Length: 161
Image: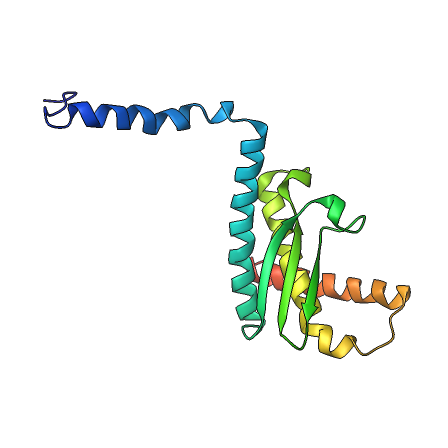
């Protein structure tokens, strides 16, 4: 009986097996555009999951926050993301560097994306305090340093380091 299809399924089952396996076998033959799109969708899902987790941990559930993959040409130079918010509406959009613009191993890229999400959420948490203050290049550098330190500490705690 092994290796034999039942008569009722043979005409239907074999094409499903062949077509079901074919995409797995030809994954290397996918076009660069398809692969890039799949990586973007995968990382978008990862970033959304991390956003939900950290939004909850930082008690920002009353905010409507989304995360979007963004090409480097749409970000300021030497940045990996940003956040735009509306305090009155309690809504925000976090832009995270698109995987097409990363040049590091996939796992490291995901860790970096999570860092970006946490970093931007900390900016959001600090926004009611910092928004009314006068802004300068010097205090922006200080703010970035402090936010980086806090994000790093939170992620180290989360990862048991």
